[in-house]
Amino acid sequence: MGVGISKVLPNLFVGGEEIIVMESYSFFAENNVTHVLSLCDSSVPDCLPLTTLHLDMVDSPDYDIAVHFPKVVDFIHSARTKNEGIFVHCKAGVSRSATVIIAYIMSALNLSTKASFEHVKRCRSKIAPNDGFMRQLILFGREYSEELHKCLKERYEYKDLLIMDKKYVKALERKCASNGTVSNDTKVPRRTEVSVGMSSKNQD
Image (cartoon, rainbow, N blue to C red; front, side):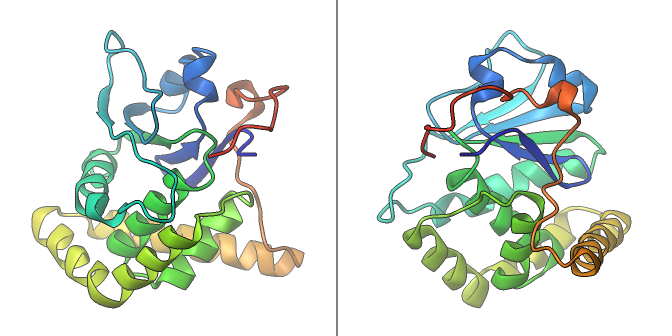
């Protein structure tokens, strides 16, 4: 599960820990990645010239992942508003990282839980947030994401980025619709698809 690294928005990538385990750090330079958000026990070495945030989350329906949403959303947004890339990962790029990316899209683009989930699913067909995480995303969409969107607009000037992101989402939606597919699996080029040949037995 979680094979490869997927592009979700311009300068926003999601994947598993393979890049860390295999030390395939050329991906960062090749894709203008300056920030890494690690959501499991694996993280990039401190010696690398990267801005990092490491939160060792638990992939359990009972885990309160929503408490981290404001912090991780701001961390992702701070990179992207500077036109710098960010890589978000957990163990397999299926549950924890997908949940955080969905929360980010809900907040930054002011989209619904359903629309945000569907976009990430188009980019990475293997995502599967656990039931508890999905319940938290639904509640977040009902009560908090719009407020966080307003906070981001007050803190950052990102009108152009917002327009670009919404165009990206719409373009991918149209592409999948015209192809009659649910997912486009927008993987990064094979030269940086670091998990090729690895076992798919890892759980998120």
